[in-house]
Length: 351
Image 1: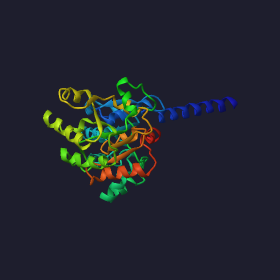
Image 2: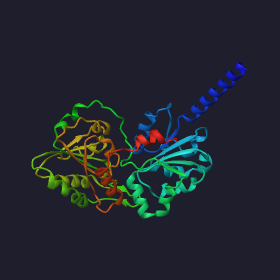
Image 3: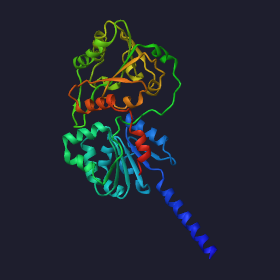
Image 4: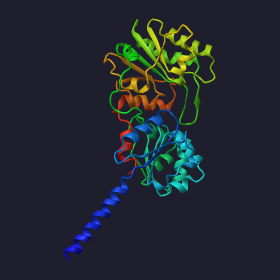
């Protein structure tokens, strides 16, 4: 009798251990590109609590070569990965019955299409910013109601996009040391695509207009570091046009001491010109820089991840004042607790 009870108990322990193990099996993480989404996917991969997930970047592996059948949970990170999933021949079949964690900083038409294709076939854990949920409610109440139905878990609704830099300090290179005493830092993004699919290509005059309010609040003779994203230049711009754009920004801050910090690729095309340009430290180094408390930061809102990554408080500004995506995101950043979606994905991505 005792032996039978003991054996039954052992079977139950083994069974529940198996179930627990199955429920905590690491997921497959799918992303694409070399930008914020891919970096954010790496942070999630490196900080997963139960084992080590497999990470696939669709820039390197065609979607039809990915085999998610052995995973009970798949995390799809970013607009690029969502778009690629729609190109798969049998996306509904290979994901059917699985738990799908889905993150994007913009709810665009491809996001809606993927949700439509997988509706009633998977269990969704959705991770969107509060501002995007608010905007969807204004633009399309039927899809807002679908997202909020009992079929879906919206774990997101935090104020910020995912983090793309791992927590903790990094070694600061010697070339970055002058930045520790800078008065102002301006983080300049550039051209982008909105959630409605509109591509925004900005002229130099439009950029100067967007910078005028910053000029009005920055003290005379103050030092300014301007961090340039590669998107600051249009791909079709000539070298002369790029120089003209930089000089227009310099003229906007003519009463200040300005230095541009740019990538190695951008610098190679501008070294021969008489411009105050320096090689920028890496993005991770800049995000974890021990900035002086007196340094004031401004950032164009098209750099969504920066607001989650940069430790000091930032004053947001818009290249396009009527951009609803960015206006709502900036409002949330300023008026709510600064919480990124990363921790929510780590906690609930595979619930």
